[in-house]
Length: 122
Image (cartoon, rainbow, N blue to C red; front, top):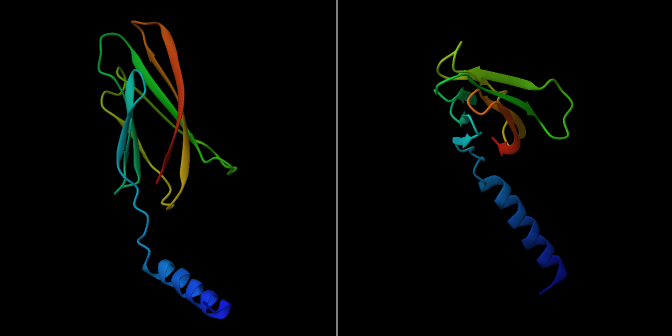
């Protein structure tokens, strides 16, 4: 095949893929974090943290950052005593963004704090 023809076909394919590409859709998801859950609801860009309803005290705290981006972290904390149910925050409406979630969870029956990290994209 002629090199000029190959370049032309390649450029046409690249342009068509950009024009016809579907926008990225973030999926709603939920993650167990020891003594509670972290739930992301895509339609509302809402992240909710809920400590387990259990005997004794339980709390979960999540700190969100964007890897490689300097800025103020988003901190969401929920406990089962002062705030039964979930504590939620609306995330900035960016598309194709990755967040790093560092969490701590505590339950008085165990007496220790569990820590972990996960990433998710919206």
